[in-house]
Image (cartoon, rainbow, N blue to C red; front, side, top):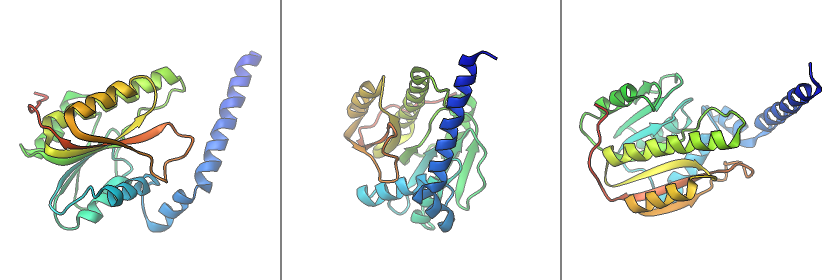
Length: 222
């Protein structure tokens, strides 16, 4: 086996080992396990809900990229017995009481149509997107895929978010980021960047909170 290839395997192995070590030593991971939450990401959303008062009783919320369900757990708990929560992910998700789940690829028209059918003509008050692509390790490819998912989430909002509604979306800083934020500012009255405490400092991820949706034509996948 060529030495170069062996070196690549060694680097990847060391990187994976470091990630695993950091993951299991992470205080948010330990806290999530102790509190019965499905992911450390729950604490990111919980902080933003508190800071920006994102939820009110009776809201209709759509959670894109929901699996394994950390965000859906937080939202459902905070909504109590009121409101609706629709969740979608390409991966399966163990059921959560009061959460209507669609399993499928958000990029496919048929999957989007299933989500739209659950809305049954109603508009969402809040759209959450923690979607991220599978990482290839090629930065330019990964960034392009992440921005494509972000564009799809914005398109969904243009069709299914009520006027005055809000979008909270994970973005990765890089190519296309500035243009995307500029477009959000066209569609929403206010756009602010958030970096929750539970977000790892070395990560390029940030969360864009767009509020005061200006409204627009409803889109359809049909």
